[in-house]
Length: 255
Image (cartoon, rainbow, N blue to C red; front, side):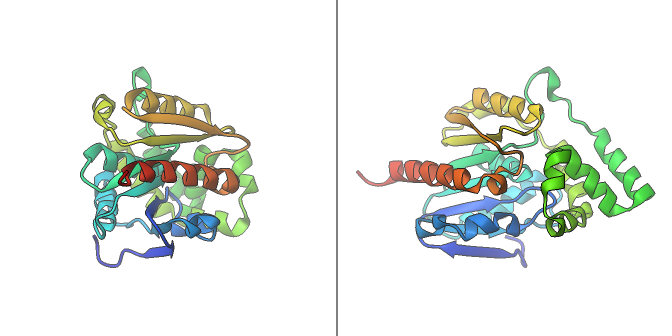
């Protein structure tokens, strides 16, 4: 694990590792960290490294966190964090009992698989013309949608747009990553795929592609929520996490 990786922990019990998406840090999990989940589980959230240039490097950091104890954990990833979690379970080397993937921003399998690599050039052009925060806002509007962005509290929105350098690095890492859909059938790890009812349609296509490709996955769409469903529908999200984690960790308990 890289020196200086910022990690926060809350609660007691089996471990749940929370991996944040782009334009965010561990505080995106603030509601979960203060929730009743900590009565059942040890919640672990960290700030992904700004200098990690690939999805695999972020997955290495997460794997090192999990390796700190031998007991199996549940991994929860939001957006790009879900791509990191997917890479972890694809490898099959970390002690993971199950994974929850919230709308990983991968291209779906098949003819739509070509990534929008032009976005980085558009992002750089926006930085040059209007400044980094304006480019950060452009990204957020693409990912969240205009309505969700307007509902975001001003302080969070400002903090997110200021992470424009990290956003760009995440986009470069994402576009370079190979989802390897053809390898996912061999993944035996239970996976819960979560989508928001209000999210952009292309997230649903990717979730459905992952459900078809993975060996042991189910898909659930959270009503009245969008891409940031863990913050928009926290009660439902926490119930889903608690139920899934209890199920997969209970299956590992000696009978």
